[in-house]
Image (cartoon, rainbow, N blue to C red; front, side):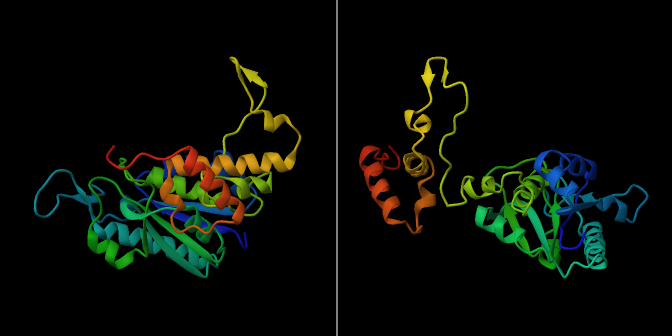
Length: 261
């Protein structure tokens, strides 16, 4: 599987990750030998008869904290396995709400280095011992500003985002090029048959056959949606003359309310 992207996940629920990764684009990409997955359960590295991987937090408080020892051993095994299969270097990523927000640009960077394997750390409970993070983690990534029960779903989201960027993963290569956020904008609305549904018609331009008009309409819709829904994405972005002209008009037509109103 030379040249394939290697991803390992350290998780208390390896079956959850492995089974979900078999579905859809990620599954097809794996079948095409574009990437490979292996999961590691830190319970397999616990040193007591009960396979304990968590304990009460120092300082008191609710919940339990994952212990550093079993996690470090599992991470070490994952890295050794990658090195044994010819991976030149490994990057360890902890999925946590405390990390930096994931962006399409970061996904593209992670996907673009086939020689760099990824080890994803999926925590549980109240979190993991911070000393483990300081010793073993290269990067912390947040999927969004919310909390879920563990890092497995965020890890799967990152895997899916990376897999679809691998050359040959999508049946239509243009799909990855035209997706939301590739150009730093929210995607335009999409329509399919029937042409009229419950009294609502497809926008006339999309059935006009005028490809230039369709391209411009889609660009305008992307700019409008981004301005109205995620204006922060526009900050610091470099615009073409066409984009600037369209956005100037959109700002006049759809002024956003002041904060707090």
